[in-house]
Image (cartoon, rainbow, N blue to C red; front, side, top):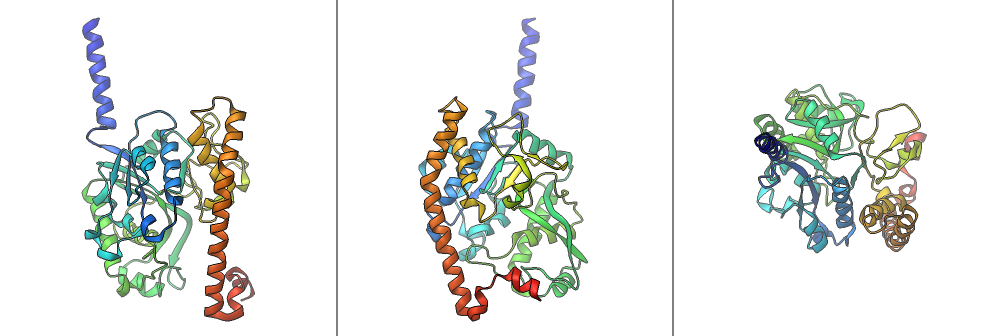
Length: 357
């Protein structure tokens, strides 16, 4: 009996080590917080990353989460399983913001990685993500955002001339993808994807890829989608995992509570359950998002749900006021820039211009 117990214990221990291999970093999550020093955005990105890590740790299992960051936020650095500093050797002075995603295979300490952007929250047990990705039987997986494909005769916000781009890439089309969640193993097929992505980035002027902002040198979703098509890799179908990037679509949900393990995200309509929410640029400043972050942060201190809710509301209000001020300043700055470039017409939203045309 005792011998059987020892054997069973050893088998269980071996299984855990093979599944997660915490010391050897075999499998884990990876996220990115870069640009906080360069762009002086305060603790905004640190706050988001803390929320993501808290949502991963909510179920109490050992799912390591490594962090690529130039932040010196002590609390955030202590929360990460491993802290990885950004390296300029990969792309020189151009290496900033989301461009680090093109080098995830270089950064990751894991043999098997799920990269999640810091502005996401898990609304499921992390194991569900691993099960979903491993079931795909591909070493590199990214999700398509919709059934829409970019084809000749059309346009793409990140490409100067879509027809020319497709010809130079030697492909007929590529789908619209979600870049907030990427699964990959350290393997030849994943290396091929990353190598192709980096080649497109290095030749971005030749391919007519636009620089979108100071922090977004190119649209990484376009690069990854193109590489997947060139290497004949399947994309994960939309709707089965992420919510279309836009939290405003959450109007159709009856329930939003990151702490409710028994009744995760539920839609009014019969569609696949969402496991991860990728908050849009505007909704990162919303009260609901801050409330979710503070519930994750404070739930161990308050066992009573009502008290926890009140404490989370009180903790969210000061931050909300600061963020709303920043958002208003951003809008004013953007409108002044559009006015200088286009005159009074620059103050008209693009969606209204497009509807008129």
